[in-house]
Image (cartoon, rainbow, N blue to C red; front, top):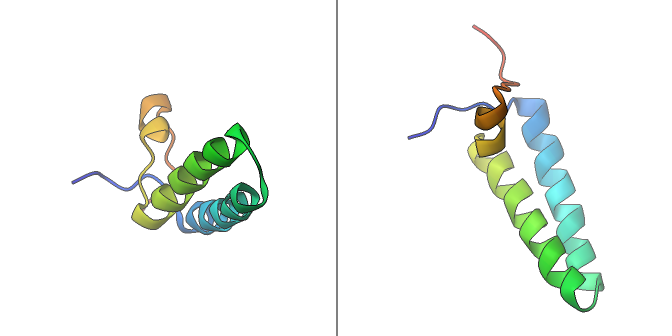
Length: 66
């Protein structure tokens, strides 16, 4: 499918940050709920699958080179 471009440390940081954003969405009110929820979802999904479209766009790869 997609070639992984998010390294292990980056993935852990994304999932932890995503969980923090999800908690923020739970505690927020108004439009902030939706903004934080979308940001949380994006961070968690990219952390779990190991691929980030923006990294591809900018030519960034945090995976270790074999």
